[in-house]
Length: 428
Image (cartoon, rainbow, N blue to C red):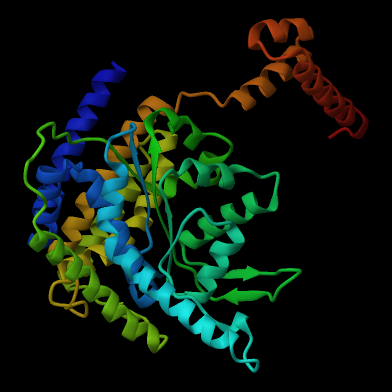
């Protein structure tokens, strides 16, 4: 029954993906289709990576005042698949312009740093490095990079499990800071950093984006260690493997196709630089018909939310936020070829954003159908020992069931006995 539902969801997701690709501008549609044909890159992986690229390039330079809030276009995306599924090539191909931009900025940074090192009047720390992406950084480095690049910072990780481990680790300050940074950053809240050894700083608004991949067998990690309860999982747009091309091509991806895609992304970056230089943000406007369509869509999401299972209900609540983010990013993609970003948002863009929103909801249903029933081993052991103590069982009984070591069982056993004694003493 579960496998049948999974197959049905996959068929639905494929139909939604094809509908989305058909609605994209020709330069983006050809980029996806030809990368699939010539480089065997799954269409869904490249599309999600393109969303990340445009989301990162947009930054705080564009906003949409709708739904009672000022919305921005930062997105969190994760590609799911097995080793060799071409997740990394999709990410690399879509973000090539961003990486090139960072390479050039780093070279300029190095030149300026050397110039300033030769001047005794200027300290080295005054040199700022412009960048769009950070990789494998500490939370302090990521936040500081964002402080120096306030319009956006992209967290680009080839394997997102390492980031998940940091976010879920509540036993050190870095874990809690990553958690706060990504949860608050999703809704563009302020960042206030107090540091002992260096200057403290404060950002009025934040704009982190995320692109990473995760192996299918590691999916249970997404739902463990409080990631589900904190709402971090609900903020991610997941992309499982949907399309496959087993035919090896003798031809290469045409340069013209790559250039057309890269030109559109460069247009957005160039436009953003002018807005950023003036420390402003361009407010996008909705056509009256588009505004009505958006209102009806969000209202329907709210109504639908009440009939969903709890795990899908929480994801639906984030869909009510993501729709605004997707509208901004897709409007910029639609108008990137001629830099017509100031044009009003049309009903066609709203329809496209609705399709994309539903596509990612179907993807979430697919991964949860195989992952939500995975039990967190640590939580399971804690509950089992508490039950054993309450019901008069022994440590030996627990060890025989869980196969944990005697020392681990003894440690947990006495921990909960002490907690029970404390409750009896205090009455709490």
